[in-house]
Length: 462
Ligand SMILES: Cc1cc2nc3c(=O)[nH]c(=O)nc-3n(C[C@H](O)[C@H](O)[C@H](O)COP(=O)(O)OP(=O)(O)OC[C@H]3O[C@@H](n4cnc5c(N)ncnc54)[C@H](O)[C@@H]3O)c2cc1C
Figure 1 (cartoon, helix red, strand yellow):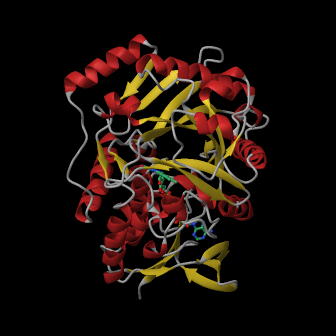
Figure 2: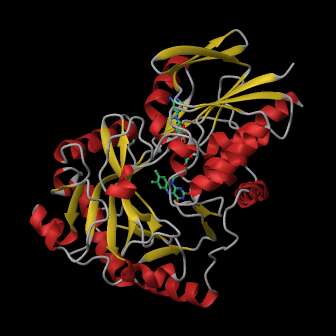
Figure 3: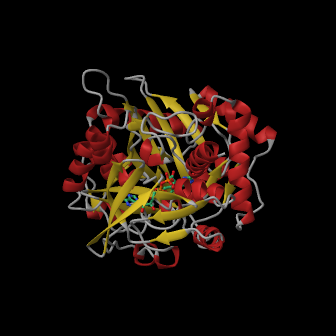
């Protein structure tokens, strides 16, 4: 008889674990996801600039996960967006996983074109960065584009269905119980509770599933450690400002240490000719960005984040981050805050009139002009101002008065579930994968942890 595997979450982590398991016919595989199917995941923000507060939010939930409507940049390095070498304990295995993820994406329609940059241009950028006290990280990347990621995800989903994988959509997992040798997962579908039993469980609910996960971690006694989170803003500038670095790297990563506090600040998720977007979480809003291959804006945006680590006796960075996100949401009246960099520097609010006069026209309209310094802690605001001014030496224009900042952008990696090298928790046969359990921070790494979890189950059944 086939062994049943339930996977919570149809993001890259869940999909790739199903992909790996489906290569073997020993398993009945069921994926539960709180969101909609890929074809129904339309975000009105893309078309009207207004958020309809879809429930569940189509940006974060549904087949393909938060990666589905994303920019679809594949960072092809095992140490960016996670640390596969640390997780597996082997450097050759880490790179093998990256290549396996990449080859599956290519099989399902990701573009052949690889952004690797020319050596001379990379060296020139590295030289300039070092002169400004900034570290530039070079990464080979593939760009799917948010208009094509649904096509790629759809192809993967059809492939999995042909292999017998069952997708249960709009299924909100609410409880996990261990009953003898089985895991019983309770989920709500159209407000009706259902229960499903399985020998193996892979929990991969992404960052948007962190509330669910936290409650289960406490109830089941899953062991975790606290880790850092990144808090900051999304920066939006004219596309010509970013063009010189985009020619070298599609999603350039810069690492900076702030002058006053010596805190780590980084750029992340650059969307050239892209759009800023709103994320709707349970109880607060956030911002993010995406770009398409065919439809372009006049702007570029990137996340600009300051790292926060809390040490004993209070280490709960997740609760700290959520409190900040909630303050920003209150100040924005339920919408993200927007402010010109010049206004933040001058210690004054951006009014609707000041935003209207700005040289940069915002790509996200569903925002409230305000004062980010009233939402983010002083230390973070100081780090962001100093570091953006430093980045301006390398990229003239990013630190101009009319640069737009959107808040809050918070990357919650605060809790990391303790796992072995195959992503099995301290509870036998309960595996975890992806961003929501603190094991990854991007598409490739989350997918790779999904593959590892599947390999763990395959090993147990061999
Ligand atoms: C707008 C945006 C742009 C991004 N751009 C990029 C990019 O260009 N490149 C990159 O590498 N990364 C990008 N990222 C990050 C990337 O999408 C994530 O790192 C990746 O998707 C994480 O995969 P995951 O499977 O761990 O989680 P997710 O992709 O978040 O998937 C988790 C899934 O679990 C489901 N779920 C949650 N809770 C429950 C529950 N209780 N019951 C059932 N289902 C549940 C959700 O509906 C979701 O589908 C972007 C993210 C966003 C939001």
